[in-house]
Image (cartoon, rainbow over all chains, first blue to last red; front, side, top):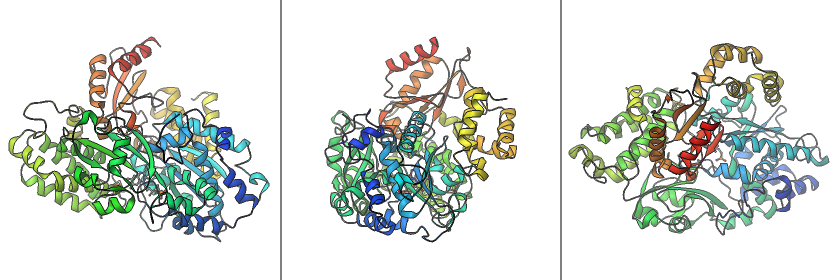
Length: 448
Length: 159
Ligand SMILES: Cc1cc2nc3c(=O)[nH]c(=O)nc-3n(C[C@H](O)[C@H](O)[C@H](O)COP(=O)(O)O)c2cc1C
Ligand code: SF4
Ligand code: FES
């Protein structure tokens, strides 16, 4: 048995091998879809139920799913699309992969129900290129659903038709951004579009489109089967249901844990086996690498739901909880994060393309002992000049971590600059979690 | 230029999209082409462009935008290690060092016998299983201790 914790509903009853259609049906799968079609439930009623559940998007922004679905034009005559975002590449996030390989039919059923609710006739699941085996497995699951009559023309004898396909990503983080993703399905570079128009009016091939995260879709069958109220009551008002958290970094048992929204962070940390080697907790990035870092004391007093984390000064994001213990050098940690955004910027907007290289270069020189005190103001300034001035949120994602690291761990940066060595690691000592990647000097040449 | 089997695979991909949107299959077509040829030479990309009715430059743009396409020949086995922060906290830099020592190469280099190329990757969506190594973009190996890395290299050397 795979153990995601006692509160698991999306990942309950999974053993790693029982992902097939017959297994899913045994767990009550496709019952919700069958009932919708048999009772000819009006699509608006499905949307109302999802709204009631307070399901919020699990991909990063936490936007209410029912509300998003209601933006799809009802009377539109042409094609409309449901798109699933399985391009999971936000550092720290590894939950959608588990959903896809252990419970793929929950995602498929969720997409079909979404198609029914919004009047869409086709869907695509965009799957991160690095998990190729999962991509192939998902195609197999689609085949099973098609053969059983859950996909295709006149599903289960109703007048509702829906087709579903998998589309491969191939190593570009920016395709996780929903309009970059749509460009990518269209066979182009995955460069995000200006918004508005939003996908609900101008999406895939210019048609009305809804993009939701894998976990968002996977929650939908449960909501339809048990009711929006039941889902809502698992969590907190405005924060319905359970959430999968990927806990990584300095914990004894890194992994995915499904808990009710509103669960104290301390409880989640305990589920992950606590801090590695009984060391002291130093800092946590609670929602994936794009979100602000928080010091241990703040995290230990916080609950894991969208509103509580926001109140604490960060964001729940994709639910990737990156745990750092007292041996972590925060300058080095930020250096690696800044490198990621520099590497993954799509290059369309000048503030992001130039700014991410700049941030990385400056953090790198502080880390390697050639920084100046003015660099700290410079980092703040460059961040401010990226945030809010770009086409997509990758710019903010690059800037927010920098601002938060400086806010909470400024003294470590100052120490690096003043003493040309590390407060945490000591002079000349190896950092406890390894040396800086050998990519860094070469990347620096490119950033210059 | 590509085998009949490869073309059949590409046709299957084309069928996923509306008839006037063949270009949508370009990513999958390039994956099929790369799997067969090992890397994407200009002539391979030109062939894909012609097959899908696209301008060659549109195909080059796609191939150079996405990190997993090989625009140059690689060793028989391309090993990509994720060194992003979460994996780094869980020992992936030590794993990378071990790989470098065992292979005698640095990142972006290929062994003299042409068997291995070592690459550094960004998040692969498998962070809690770090260290992770992706072999030829297809097969992921996780929880890589030094012993497991040695066993993996031995196995790939035999093949
Ligand atoms: C740079 C960037 C990367 C993103 N990566 C992902 C991702 O990997 N998966 C995802 O579901 N959403 C990602 N998003 C958010 C999507 O744009 C979009 O908001 C989400 O897929 C909507 O689904 P939801 O409402 O169900 O959360 C990303 C956004 C940005 C700006
Ligand atoms: S903010 Fe960065 S990643 Fe987003 S569109 Fe602009 S350049 Fe591309
Ligand atoms: S950070 Fe390495 S797989 Fe996600």
